[in-house]
Image 1: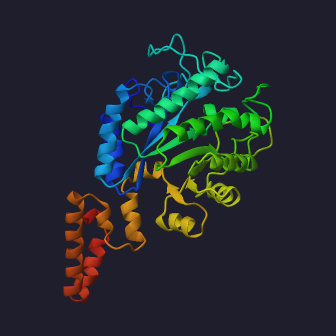
Image 2 (image 1 turned 90 degrees about the vertical axis):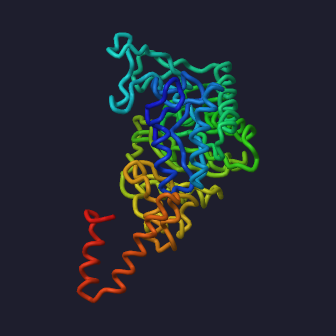
Image 3 (image 1 turned 180 degrees about the vertical axis):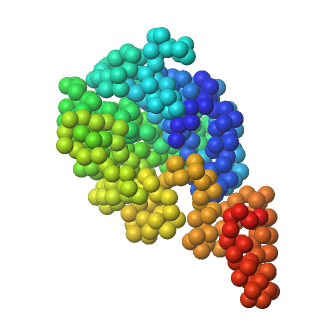
Amino acid sequence: MCQYHSVDGGPTDWQMVHIGRMAVGGAGIVFGEETAVEDIGRKTYTCAGIWDDRHIAQYRRLTDFVREQDAIPAVQIGHSGHKASCHTAVHDWAPLTDDDATGLAPWQGMSPSGLNPENRFFDPKEMDRGDIRRVLDAFREAAKRSIDAGYEICEVHGAHGYLLHAFLSPVSNRRTDAYGGDLEGRMRFPLEVAEVVREAWPADRPVFYRISCVDGQGGEWGLEHSISMAKALKVRDIDYVDCSSGGIGGPSDMPLVPRVPGYQVGFAERIRREADIPTIAVGLITDAHQAEKILQNGQADLIALARELLWHADWPAHAAEELGIDDPQGLMPHEYAYRLRQRERAKDMLINQGGEETRAAMRHHLGSRANDG
């Protein structure tokens, strides 16, 4: 999830702590935030980026630490498109203006058709063929820098109304050239991005692609279109489709996707089955048994968590304990695991050696978080 703590695209100590918490907490793969492939492809001045070689060493500090925790460092690269030039999340992404009190000047974003649904200060530029070639090169170079920065998985962010999703949806793509019109034309540019990233990325490392399986309320891009897109991604050797939703709205009768637990799992299941490609389930997955059931039922191949890890960064280790995995403390760094195992042995010893009254008291006290430790 975007943190809005970068300086000129590069990560700071905030990202080191943010990413480090999740690596320490037992996650198998640790993704950073969406990372812009060029400076005008950011949403805000504080968004992450990897458009310059100087970023390589800055991210290497993060990836080295993630690997030290036996986790896999992963990068998500993208382009904000018409969603560029705004404030951060704490100001609800309000557009930058010429007379903004912060003194941050607005800049012109880009889009397939020059539409401005976010009401940015400048109308986005409708991309010409030169822009398309430049952005393709930017994705390619960002992937190469990500390799040098130590990342082992690369995900292309093609969802949530950003540039690639904007090309897919008829709501935002009104072009009449080869990059618009029918489904094949609207998929052309996103698939070209997938191709250049896959070509740049080592063949023995996976590439993911995040997609909005359906537009937002009133949109036109639907699940059947996403299944077609997923089939095309499979042909291009994309390894996993990350199944999200939303980001573009319009006047149609497409309903809002209700935010209930696991609300996007059905998308992952359909795409997995009908496009025959591995999928990632994400969206209000908060319980260990819920996550395990999705995997055991064959609805998805990987589980992704975002907000839940912000709230509970060591969720994976606690999930392992809930699911009865032997030595769940072993998912934590040895600096933690040794002492946690000591505590578990002490609990067991007291319960086993004490009488029934002692055992009852210990169960009561050990079950209370207030008395933990």
